[in-house]
Image (cartoon, rainbow, N blue to C red):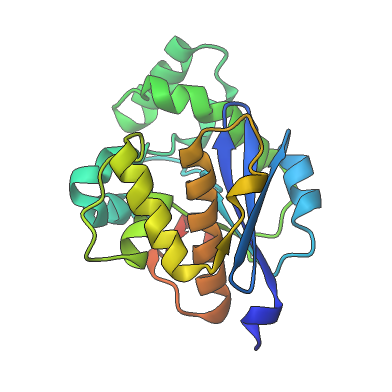
Amino acid sequence: MNSEAEKFAGVDGAKGAWVVAFVTGTTVTWTECASVTEVLEETRDCARVGVDMSLSLPERGYRVSELEAKTFLGPARSSIFHTPVVDVLDAASYDQACSISRAITGKAISKQTWHILPSVKAWRDANFDPHKYVEVHPECSFRVMSPTTVFSSKKTGRGVGQRLATLMRWSEHVGLDDLPLGPAVDDFLDAAAAAWSARRFHIGEHRVFGTADPSDRIVA
């Protein structure tokens, strides 16, 4: 399997849109998509695609993959929002979503989780191959990529510099001159990290949080 000749992608949400990082060999380029449908179209020729979004939802409780990823992240564990139970997607308001979640799990959902529910639903409703599109958490990817780095928040200049330096050790050319104007810099970095994990998954070098089954799996 010659992974250097194949194309991989990583996807990260960006304020109602999606940033897609494409990796061919050691070159990273980016584009912006308005919908999940557009993401699927743009990545149709990719061997594997890493997605920074919940691609499966539990019927009750928390997913094992998220619990394991939180343990791995340690002080950065708050960067993972627990995926809500599937019934929450039918809620018409935040209060109703909390009521549904409490009835099933005993706990409400966070406001952050409520705000990403449209994106979770968009992927749930999309017709994608779960063996090609794999769930990734970029903070896990960066720490697997550079295990000796003590990463600062990705919202800080130091954190951005650390992540960019980590990516530059892996990629010879990072196309920063071609970045779309809208998304924040951390969205681009997260998308690139997701692409890195997608390639690792493709060649069987990935780390798994959860199970081998797509219904409860995060890869790094």
